[in-house]
Image (cartoon, rainbow, N blue to C red):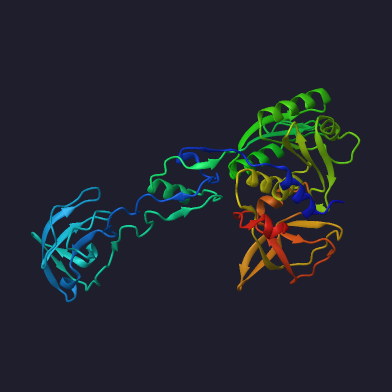
Amino acid sequence: MKPLAEAQRQVLATVGRLPPGRVPVWSSVGLVLADDVIATQDVPPFPNSAMDGYAVKGADVAAVPTVLRVLEDVAAGHVGTATVEPGTAVKIMTGAPIPPGADTIVKVEDTEPGDGAVRIMAVTEPGTSVREAGGDVRSGDLVFDTGTRLTPAHLGVLAAIGVAEPTVFRRPRVAVMSTGDEVLAPESPRLAPGQIRDANRPLLTGLLSELGAEVHDYGIVVDDATLLRSTLLRAAEECDVVMTSGGVSMGEYDLVKAVLTELGDIELWRVAMQPAKPFAFGQIRSTPLFGLPGNPVSVLVAFEQFARPALLSMMGSRLLFRPRLRGVLAHDVHTDPEKTVFLRMNVTEQDGRWVAASAGGQSSNVLSAAANANGFAVVPVGTGSVDEGSVVELEMFRWSETRTYEDVLG
């Protein structure tokens, strides 16, 4: 069997990087910057109030109570005309520019307004609630560097500094298809003996959408070599990546493996991992193809260990692998010592340490356990049984990536 790390290296060495382009900031979440982002202006662009209240001179509110004359009101989006002199104040809303002469904001809760005046009831230190120009970002700062994967917070920063169309690596177009005569559409009301509903396409579509890929659904392809061949060729022509599920194990009726080996440079691997030991990878006319197993948990694990890092690499990300932490098992586990085993776990923090408990059945068809889990307990090759309380690595597959190629594969 092929070692897991060797298989991961081969996959990542095969896939290329997608071309960059400019996209609206509104639709760039999940994409990866292809250029450094340098600020061309301060954020905020002017000193402004962090509170609703009164702009004053700090020296005027060092002793209270005190009464100040109110010169005017200034709302957010407007600029006042008055200069704050000793003994005066300007009523101000959150976000409004600090008027000349003021250096402190007294929050409205610490005041008693009167007719043309305000009574200050609390001592307020100079500089309180004043947001300085450039307090968040200064003009000329390197805000985000190439390879940063954009989250909603990144989008907000880009908008604030006026980057309406960041330069990012293109979103990958991924073809998804399920295979097999036994597979029916999820909406099928009845199942004949021997038939199952297709869990894999909804699973993959969700995983890919979460990643930021553009999903192209090619449906269910029955066990017909001519149809499968034409569908794979069309998908390889229309998309950046092809992803199938089913038909790559050692059974004599596994049609996919036969067609794949006809079409391109495809290797059928038996990877030393569980689940997802049978796995096909290669290229059809230079388009990468991931031939995932048929069992849904195997699909999930193979996607996490191979397809997701590869797609992130194609998208230009430096971070390719989910984070791992060390925790203890809540119970004994028994695994195959010849494989790296991924056990679906509920990982919680208890008394300052991470504790992993089984999320349910560990067979490769029991997807409900994966739905209830937030991490994998990773039992390495050569281990086998692990006792309750033993320390294991926990891969948190609901957390964003934190590990690079070098961190994982050297």
